Image (cartoon, rainbow, N blue to C red; front, top):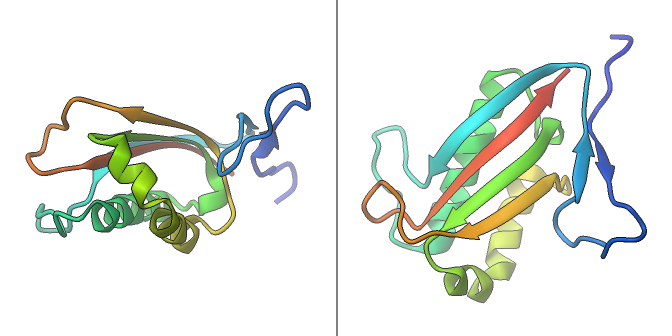
Length: 136
């Protein structure tokens, strides 16, 4: 359709160049989709594992499922927020996390924030991912 645009990464030259995310995403026109925090559980509301990477993979899979249900694709994402209970688990498993991310999002890196939190609502949850998308 005419007038549709995909989000465009905004990475000013006078800022440190990001790796694995964008400093900003310019989006529109389109429909805004807020994706609630997704944890590593399946359709039966059971955590898929007590392993951090397995939970990360499932949480991202859940984000992608919400996006697809709304008619979107990964490149429609303009923001991801990743909440985790232990940043050491995250940094120790970066290669595996990167593989999982690329499996679900390819090489699309929206604006992102990574926050360590004291705990998550669901007992045993190690990571929660929420997103914001603009779907043409």
